[in-house]
Image (cartoon, rainbow, N blue to C red; front, side):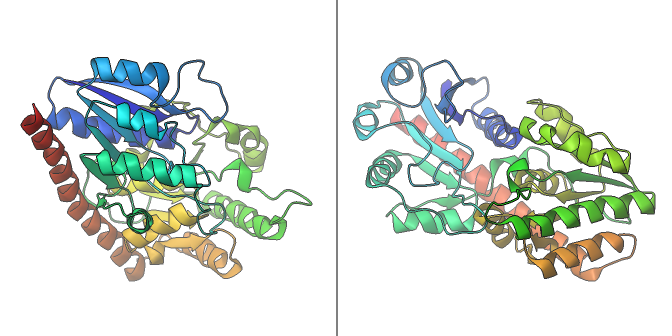
Length: 359
């Protein structure tokens, strides 16, 4: 059994959490499977190899693969969706196809940008040909429904990399996933004031943790964030942790934490999977969709809203005190996670059954 997995070409380890989650499930239903990774896209033209399901990659996939999986990241984000292919290539594909874990995305909470007509046609043609479409959140289900495509809501594949019961008790070890560099305030740029609100609260969170004596670390999810983090953390006596593209190092750190303050979506997703309570900062539609999917409104805080940022700072100050609202939100999210694990397992079992019947 050979699977060709088209993954986003990225420097963001969050995308690799998704990749690992997909690979775990594939290995469960296809013991001994060989998984070949191919770049689904290359927005910065750094891969140096053929990209997407077309040309040489299409020929290789038709010759070698038993199943094609396209999965991870915000590939549905417009105006041109982030999977390199075309309608002719889709028609020429001879191998069963599945889409797993994709989602919509946006900037600073705006609505998703409209798709180009070409991208609409490619999504419709490829998804109608697919033997399975699984998406990460409720917003993406609605997005595809508007395109006439039915999808199964499984949650993000990264949710199920680790799978643990919910931790409880006052946190003794806290992890803070740092904000993306692109959201820091830049003088003269649109959104400077709102960015300052977020940055100020981030500093306040770090100051509160420092003053409380709680053991904490700050972790970068993307190498670009290391351009600002070292000097930013100096006043707090901290050096940022960055492990590059090693997912295990990140996951070990999450597993050891009692609470994670998440300025990154996939850090919250990984925390949920491992049963670690989290506080999630909402930057955009992706984060809001995760919040809505797991009914996590009470532990989610708008990044650029003054009142929400005050609420986040207050929550961190009171971390040592029991809070029934937070506990109920975390318990609800874990319950939803457990439900979606069953849906996920059924989805992959369905892929295996369809492949078996087609042979």
